Image (cartoon, rainbow over all chains, first blue to last red; front, side, top):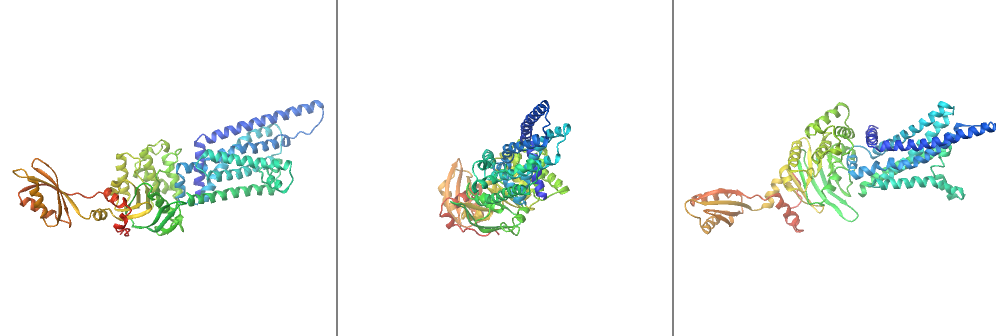
Length: 255
Length: 327
């Protein structure tokens, strides 16, 4: 535990000492802010039209703003995750500092969890900035906070899984660009896998669609905590970290 | 302190380390010598549990590197070929980070950080970013991180590589001053370094052990016959070199006398003797013949020559008695 924290703080530090964290935070906040602005603008227009027609169409902040925005955040996240994880191991391998970690009395798994938690924390910081937008909804409206909290939980779980995959990919190469590009490819594939369910209902298509990370986010976006979806993400996290530790070990045998 | 038996590392196509066995006693400085690509780094990486051996065993402080890697790692300080520094960290916080990794905490951690900063003369860069340090400082910070947890065994991979002569001397002195408390293995391909810093030498070439012995014995052994440099001056007249040569040849134990040069009434000879300690007889003979003995010194064979002799031909290992355990 102590070792995990040592690694964790070192990683957090290197994110925030370098411009990485600030650039990611800024870009994410800007992009999400733009989405929010659009969603809000559309919502206001709809509301005015309803009033002019004199109809009492039920307007709902949760359904019309929060839910689509959470889905958007999960997709935007896909693009940012490779940038968070690509350096985790690739940089250490390139600079030779991996030798320090590997010859210190710490277990591989402690290093891996420390790094993964740091990556997840950075992502959580990015989500924190999106919360500023939602705070305005609470100031001027009264949306239900519970679906929003569950949505955030879903975002964290989904990111946790993808970050674990990214961490794994980062152990495979010395080159950060390769690690980043490969992680991006995998993230994108895991997103679009869901599309096959649109035209095909065979078993293989269902399996593929099931593997899509987006499929499992739908329930969270609705504000429903589906245990099976949570378990899907936890499994991805576990497998990602497990493969990372296997990969670290095989580094020693191959080198 | 370190026991290595039949250690082997095989890669897909080549054998990097081939059945190496040696022992290192507590408190010794051992030089690990070999040309580039001889397998020095691979051996060190196996000792530090960075690489697992293909076959054979290595014990550090009584723990096997394969069976109890964590125990071994606790007792080892390792400086890889390029110091493992994080450029975005400051020296002090880097050392604290490494200290924590090695299991230090609280007041002890602070104490050790201050101690190594003092010891390695890096206190003045404690608040500087590692990425901005010069090569010499980087190397010293690397050394500082290796000794921060006061390990029993220090493994240093080419600690003086890339330093300027002054820094090399400083680093050597630092390493020497660390002996006693620590058992040190340092690898190098620079021979004088071994002569100056180490007590024991392990020479490997192409993954095979060529020799392991003390520096002194190794010089003696490779020398076989003693060679002396003799300068003789004629007292009143010029020297007739052939007469001198004949006279010197008759001294008991001298096997060969070779005339080198002469300037004025001084002549230089190279004298080779079979058994040791003919210098006294030689000096007496020269003086009794009425000449001046200006200079008489043994020309010790440098490690460089020994090294070349041991590693040059494939036949060399067969001629030399190989792999005697280091006492």
